[in-house]
Image (cartoon, rainbow, N blue to C red; front, side):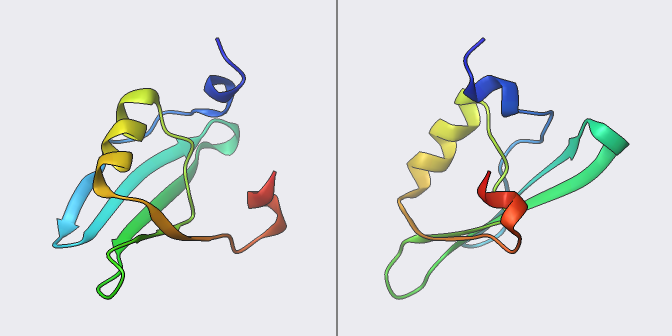
Length: 82
């Protein structure tokens, strides 16, 4: 197990909610806390905005990378920077 995999918790596939908008849902093991990552393709640059990023497994990372490069990675708490 790599260090990265130690941070990957159960999560869904990357689900397209509508054109240029995807969601990944998951839960943290402690307290069964729900998590939602949202990916939005920016209309002008075509880059991705990732809100509340979730540590993804290799298969889903490849799917995310296939969507394009991230222009933004929004973190709303110092806890997300760890």
